[in-house]
Length: 357
Image (tube, rainbow, N blue to C red; front, side, top):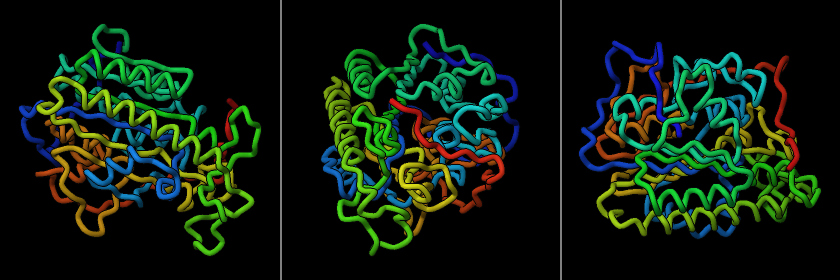
């Protein structure tokens, strides 16, 4: 399921900001989303598969999401390449009705516009990613065509299983996966009934400085690290299936791993606030096309869609239609620093307190 239909208002006659190379390199993209994963936690948890990706590629462990650090705007920004002032999603539920995905679509739409025969796959534990961003009425998309995959799952293990099956049997060009249990553990939305916490430091971090927020010894949550380690195992299974593809050596895969937000900056088991602990994310990149990030360059969640499109050889729209820029790739244009718009309004803001298992 999930081929993109015609979408009014998405084309642009404006000059292009980045002309990508012709897609003659059999380029493919795998994006792995780890909901609510604090960057610091990857240095505390045992994550051999992510460590291998970091060692073989590059990583920005101080990337940023927007100032409303919730899943709705975070995933919307990652997948459309624009900030909340354009896509208009500022929470996890109410603001979907005002979304502007007809003007600023999921990057799969741009893939399908350029190459209608290229299969795509979106497999997500959080159903809103598929239901509200990719397949919403506002996006004017057709998510029922054969040959393309749009799948909501009940568990992270099912995301892993579906991804392994897809990579073992099919021939996708662009794949997006979302794991949700790390965020559930941070909120305390697990059967254990604990209070949760986005704190990865066993001894607390009173000496670590403001970057770590309320992560004190009483807020340490081993279930949070356990969920990260379990997800790393799932990622290992997926990478094993990817590397086992008969033509993997010639397929030019780009692997991107990133979260939508952090957590624990104002309230130890919540997120959504415009503070460093909630906004700090990371971006791990691996693949033969990966080179390096310029010294001092900070990446942003909106850069992921732009980077994926550039790798696939699809020219990016003008800077009015995409805020993100390609990063870390050979031949990527020079990165132009841009301001991140603010959407945080304390009068209407509702933090993510968790929704239960």
